[in-house]
Length: 358
View 1 (cartoon, rainbow, N blue to C red):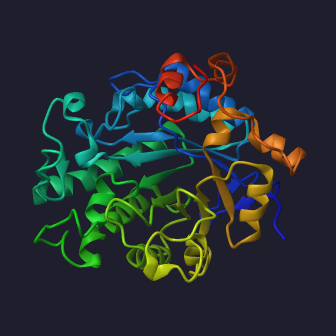
View 2: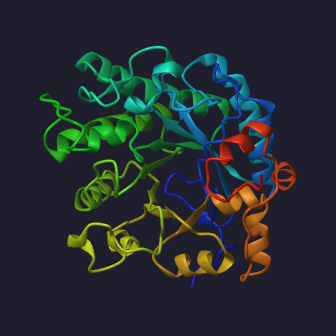
């Protein structure tokens, strides 16, 4: 049986020293032009020092109009490369794989933040979003590819493509949101075309030794569990990706859709034929016990969010003590500052119920 301390080698050749990945956590710490701040640098490098085998940045927008939150790290312009170079070098110096998550918020980009009308696969009246033209859709694909090239230039080991949580690529996947009549709308094949063209472009531009992952979420935001399973298997079958990151919200729960409650949400994905593609999952993996329970399944490594905020050295703690439990909530602001969170990150964490002691 695999253990949390075991290394793992991806098909691209990159080796992760253990089974812990830092989740791509929104933290609102970088500069408003997308340049890496010292605060975000410190937050991420502390997690590398704390033993995470793969450290992923927050969602980093690939176009200026794809910004989803204040203080978001950008990778849409060459002005961002210097900060990313500094970060990638430091993360790797601690033995972590350094990965950028590539993101576009689409209709979830706040209008007052991007100072223009948000974009979407189709017109969305609720968010006052306009439909991307065919040419603009091609431009989005190109922006993801160029962002991956910037990541490689910066020294990162790879990228993760954010296709989850209702952001732009997820909007394309949704038959509820995507009402296009062209090659990027209609069937699942057409709605997912943008994701495959991005992957193909990144692989061609960045080479076989570059790590490529894809994040998907099977519920909410108009997602259909069966369609996401089909998409996941199709992504595996391309032989172009190294890992799938499935965001489950809760790794231990049953599906929300009554039609699929014959097994847990996790089991719906561990039953796929992963071949040599690795699987990671996220969702309420909080303790040492949780880590070991998930790794008993056909999951190759765990993605840690909340407990990584509470403990920069969560991997070290769990490897030393399989029964490790995270700090009880809520925690004080001074506690979070010691764990590398800046004031802006702590302010953001106030949105999480019962997390920050006030």
